[in-house]
Length: 444
Ligand SMILES: [Zn+2]
Image (tube, rainbow, N blue to C red; front, side):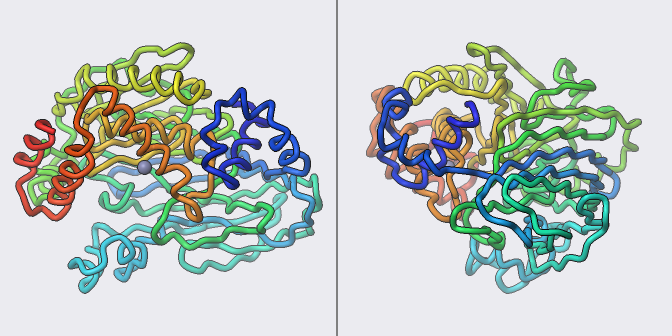
């Protein structure tokens, strides 16, 4: 989607879900849209990140340059960065309490292996180190000189990340790495001002820009990311030797998985190699890596579609790629063209799924989940609404299209709306064995 279209879309998202649902051609002719665009602006934030994954120490070090362009009519004196990993720094994670009030972690705190954080080693603007303060997941600092309308600032950051054992939306499990909300990210400045929201419940809000991200990791890892690979080999054509160190679903989240993970971790990592990805007009960047990934791919129009799964997870073989191609074509007809050159659906050790631009991490090969998460590529991905303030603007359409896809298959919505969520709730509570729940879900 061109920049002007994305600008228009975000403004629409903030105003009305009804307008959101209009066909793009109708919106383009709208006098209302022309009026809305008259004084519309949004900032531009480009990222250049180089990072090194240290699998032995579950750590990552990074150097990042942010080119920040002030397109607002305001002179900016201060700025804010999100340090999302710090939500898992302390045993009393507020984020975790938000999501799981009353569970055992509420009383005991996060287990040590589930803790992670980010350290800022240096912060400089225009080459000069600057002072800053950190409060939880927000860094606050001041531009050395006020940044006028149309001004640009180059913000350079060196950072270190302690990667947590997978909890929430990211982390490691054995030799599997899901890297989301992992780098210092500029807070949004819009007509309401800065949005330095602490990372608690709720999702995200980001500025569009170009990301160039170089990831150095052990040779044996296959890596997939927001963005297309422009240098180095991501390993997509390899056939893995097997053994991610994570184990099959039965062991997911169990001591068995942890033991297997430790055993695999003892294998010395191979020599490092670097893969560089580039993504234009995105507002976030996520990636996953695992030596055991199998990559299946096809094209849908101009889009390269990838299904990336752990080799033992044979339920994904062929099925997820076919379902994603079907979904992408159908949503393209229903909503409008998919504007990015690539889409990856990644098999992730999680329940449910999570969307990032050009990349989805899914905990199952379920087609409804694929429809929901791929719909997010439009509703949040390309439209970039403020999910913290108005999550319904993207969750609503994502669910709507998921139900529409079910209707299209002549499947019972009652069963799907009532029974499936109940079964999924039982899975979350672990009140029925996962294998029984999977069988039930297959019947629905
Ligand atoms: Zn959703």
